[in-house]
Image (cartoon, rainbow, N blue to C red; front, side, top):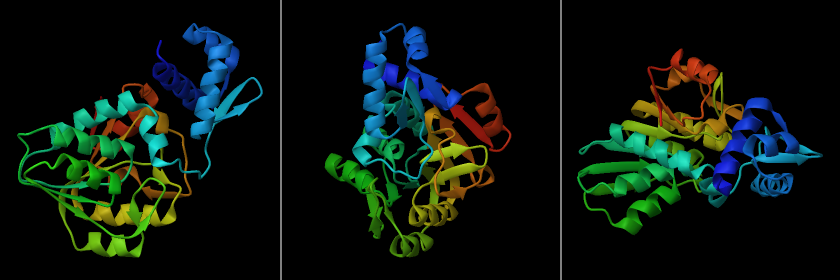
Amino acid sequence: MLAQQRHNAIMAQVHAKGTVQVQDLAESLDVSTMTIRRDLAELDELGVLTRVHGGATLVTSAHEPQFAEKMAINADAKTAIARAALGLVHSSQSIGIAGGSTCTKIAQEITAQPELTDITVVTNSLQVLNIFHSDLKPGVKTLLTGGERTPSDAFVGPIADAALSTLSTDILFMGAHGIGEKGLFTPNLHEGHTNQVFMKSAREVVAVFDATKWSVTGLMRFAQWRDVDTVITSNTITDEQHRVLADNVNKVVVA
């Protein structure tokens, strides 16, 4: 099993149980305890779990990892989600793409589709802007809001809010720092408010997140599930989590 696969499996168990033991992880993944300890040290350094004596616990703080860290976490699941999101993207659309690593993956997938033309992308993400500009994809116009820059390279605050409040998009792809039965969370109050303004500007809101985000909380809940039209998530979602989503949104896509 590759290191990334082990990390994904470990995070799935941490989110399912809250606390995990080194010995239990080693047995379930059929690797040595030394390998698990190295994995836990790496994941602790990324800020996605907290190492404790003999194991690890779930991180539920307001800490927000740097963007490069987010891109490295659960990368395969994020790519699968982004490819599923392409099914909702069509030529001649106005598309909102919020900040975050999964949304950046969606931007990467869009640039790889030469048949998509006459698209206007509205974003508050520097990383999303860079994807479209570095690729120089013809037929795509990109509009970037100004504002205060977050650790995840999103622009938020009053300037971003003012820009987004005057615009309208056909569809918006929105990620989250954390997910739960009550909705979507962020550790950044300004980002939470900007996300709310962004969602109001869209005809259809699509929440995109991998299952490891479940039960991670943040300082602010910026959306309830009734504010979301479609969810695209990873295939590690549990039956109970799927039930919560299916009971509250119009459509759930498992990638």
